[in-house]
Length: 342
Image (cartoon, rainbow, N blue to C red; front, side, top):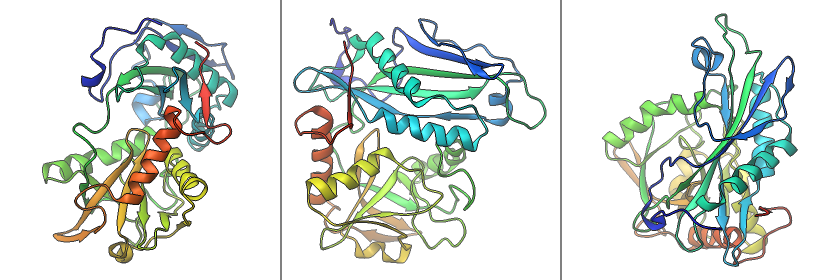
């Protein structure tokens, strides 16, 4: 391998064009065989369903260089399964799980020179997505679709170290009780844009969304699941039918139980009990866990005493263990690491 001439330690979390991407088209009831291409543009009708009615879903995962020099992905099979759930909900054709994983592997292999070196703090972010591509003017699902996978090297999510963030309780709703909050649809993220920009303008890092039906239960942020830690080190995560099932969150709960010997619980978390927790974290692909130091409830500050000044000890141990598994320091559970044959 001859790595690209990139200052790996100083790239941000943004898009850098790489050499190849994967494309497969769905027409007349079937997917074509798919191919790698150097063309990074997408040409569709001005009336394409995705442009009119937001019929699109996506996934996000990463490839890493491990300590012993291997190039690996983390649990791409779960991303494939989650996309199956997302496409079913939006009446889109299913892209087979095995083909999804193979497409991810092909894209990483074709762009292996963009996989950042071990120890750089950077990774290769992989974005599989699907959208309705043919012209649709009446409100109905498309008949033709395109599945694509591209990748881009990204820097560490945190610049200057991992520091506790401050989030606010949002007055907006993220997802309806029987809506699409449990799938990874682009429309969910569009709905969160106003709220996140408003939060940033008011000095907050993120929003805490409560359940839309009663506004008494903690759900998630615009792009991450919550983990809470009790004073006796039990790890608790909210349970709801309108929460996106984060692969990182599910992995961290396994780490907590099987690697750290902690009690874990997935249950409804009432907003009025969060002050009883001593640590809080937001988990997702980009940052693994982002520590939360304070929740601002319309001017009233709720402080997590073990994670206010710096990342709390349990959240830190969870983060270090999962990143150790991803980078090859710690033996992974069976099936978690997908090695790329380069």
